[in-house]
Length: 269
Image (cartoon, rainbow, N blue to C red; front, side, top):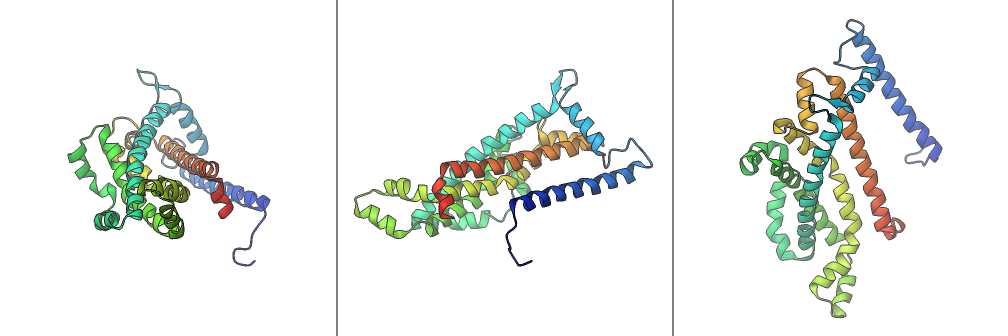
């Protein structure tokens, strides 16, 4: 078998399914060993326990008859959307300006270069002091987490992926700076912008859940915190699976969105 030797689509699907089946079998074997002494143990819940827990969190709970999973999903994903919209907008504008104008790049590069390696979760105490513990905290944290990396990636793309010949031709035809940015630079780097945002899904989720674990009264992080304390790990595992599924759905959704919005980019690749 040679390095990077292509395989058929059928082989690819079968190998992927095999990996999932093996993983589930290993987990079930580990859970079985754990339950030999105590069948009610939820430290390593069985698949049956996880299914029952999933049905429970999808059903009406408590005196207010709320569905935990629906309520937490709505709140957490709304916070994520607000953070992505705010941070992504700032990063796109800043990244394009840095990639197009050397003065802007020289001004912001030291700040973003210093800011980028600092983990946002390590600055939670600062965010609590600046934004309080209301909804603004989550939007601020997600925005802060993605702005440096996203802005620098977009800036690099604007410098490397846009030919100076196209820019010079546009100026020769009388285009203004705004027209060059909007008509030449932005369409050219749009696929990279979408891919850059897609690659930030993981870090965004980490920061949001970390903040919810600390102080939220609703949301995925809150539910993970309270159920972990109660040793209801069957619920915790279900929530983690839902988070992973949502991240995967977002990833594939943005890939197809890029293909639909920038079909020419797929042909170039």
